[in-house]
Image (cartoon, rainbow, N blue to C red; front, top):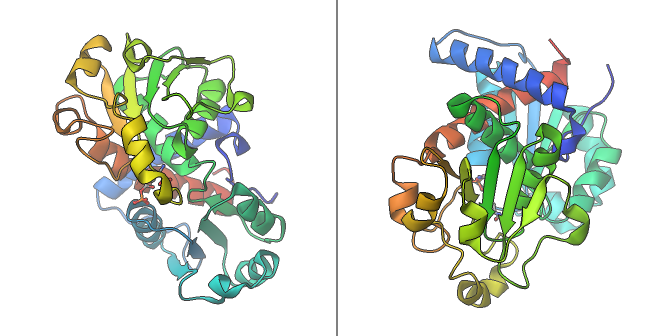
Length: 300
Ligand code: CP
Ligand code: NVA
């Protein structure tokens, strides 16, 4: 079987993503019926975290158990990885003992170096540049609520961060429109813009007529030193009830979480009727189980 990784959203074709969504539906249904499904019995997932996490750790660890396998948590704080062992050496060792690896780290380059020296599939659990597992769950959640995403309009309000970069890749792959509004100085890097993306100085204009409005924290992990400055610069980039009113009447609201009410999103929006953030979080579990199945066993 050909070795496949999921380092960026575009590592899988549209057809492969659609296959994952079909598998997700089946795996989720079985799980809801308490039916045992153990395709990864005796398989082990290694999870390496260089940044904090609640959802990613929980969904991968619980998901692997539910598929009959085991998950091992490693962090740079309490392993040799934090003491300067080369990434290449770690990849050799980890991939001789485990069947699949998930990594949350800083630069995408670290993940790529690991993958180049790994004998087993490597999954991006978030880097400074991308968060593909999040958008896998987000697109699935959209489709679950509204049907095909092709031709829809998604509004991204806020920072041009890892989650935004991955939405940009998803827009091109699934052919939906992505309206992006960032504060001045925080624009999307020019090379990431594609034909499905339009940029707006005014977030209200970006949200107009959108089927889905989504945002993320003003300050991502690793950028904490910019916190005060960002708090000032992002004031207008809050998804509030007024912004949801200019979107489509039945527009959904998503947020990868954790959220800061009163900063990037108003409490009345995230806790309101258009918000699907809890489904979105739950779907991390189901979509990643389909991803693990695909990467370890191939297309079933
Ligand atoms: N959305 C997300 O990845 O959450 P965690 O940081 O809690 O894993
Ligand atoms: N953009 C955020 C996402 C957290 C899940 C971060 O990188 O901190």
